Length: 519
Ligand SMILES: [Zn+2]
Image 1 (cartoon, rainbow, N blue to C red):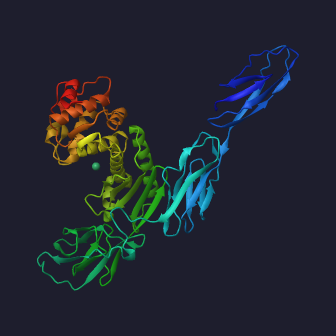
Image 2 (image 1 turned 90 degrees about the horizontal axis):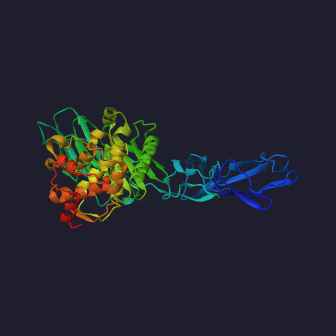
């Protein structure tokens, strides 16, 4: 029950803190008594009523007065702006589901009990061109003792996937098309007589970048004739072109979805997006229209919300609200396609159908990367304390946090590095790849049983301003890690053996390391 219930009897006020109450004033036998409610409880807000509130005291204590309290419920709502079309659906665990087809104020159908957390999500988007989001963190809170009216839902035009433009309205006019030709290996100077334009589209609009696999019988060569693209014989990746012209007399199909070319016309490669939004996360899931993934958007939204909340809780820090884009390989325009942009936006490449199949589902391909990139967004909030070059530390912390929060499998953390080296056999100074350099020392912290949530929390709240190159595992870095790790482990734990196991040089003690660093 709530606190602050005050009862009144014969002028005496009694604050009730438990299920039973007795007034201290005694009432003589034969005299009447009456009990009333002076103040109703708060936190949660409740309304109490009294049964057997009055009577005449007989020859024993009057103990049959019963106070029954029910938790108050309040409406939860807010405003919608920018809405066009119908089909906007909001859902909240306690508030129920509401379909909205007009701008203005809204109220969820079910009143929410005082003390309960409401968390409103956009679970259905309107039919028109706009998509709707929960603005900032306005959709979540705890109901106190009044209606909630400040949830903002804003609808606006769809954004293109990360690092892309929509090519409508001449937005791609300053880009040249990419032109490639595909020839038999024996005849790379072939002169194809047919061509097609690949239009990569999202929600019906052309986008300025992409990746297309070129599938055909072996023995073909792909030659870039003009435009900016990365070309191999089987992969074509570009980041700034209105479309791609493929010239070929060979039989090829495009993308992991095996699309047949429309020679002499446009070969449309169509993706559609599904955006879900709550106070933790905006998550856009893109899929090829032929690829049936009935629950992926909802599952990713649920798991990613859980991952953000878990990581934020673990390190006691928040970043900007996460704006996640789960893209198939075709919408990857740079590198492997996993990015943290430092402004809350992350891009996650969830792969392609054969890869997803091999990995056992989209969640298995996407969630470890998401947990990693979200950690980068949190690390970005630390700012100055890790001066010089914190990039390897940042990578190591991203996998350590993803692993500790339960979203990144152990074998993606260590001990095998990305370049085939083994942290435990080769030692950390042998590592050459930045994730490996970052993961390796933290792997030995984990091996020592010290990689706890509080250890990670401490790394996000350093006690000193450091200046070390986290990608150079020399004595200066070793001393910095010794101080950081010792303070993170707490209780005077000696971290020297952990650094020794990692093969990283350092001063003999925490104090000596501190003084060498001038801290
Ligand atoms: Zn990273």
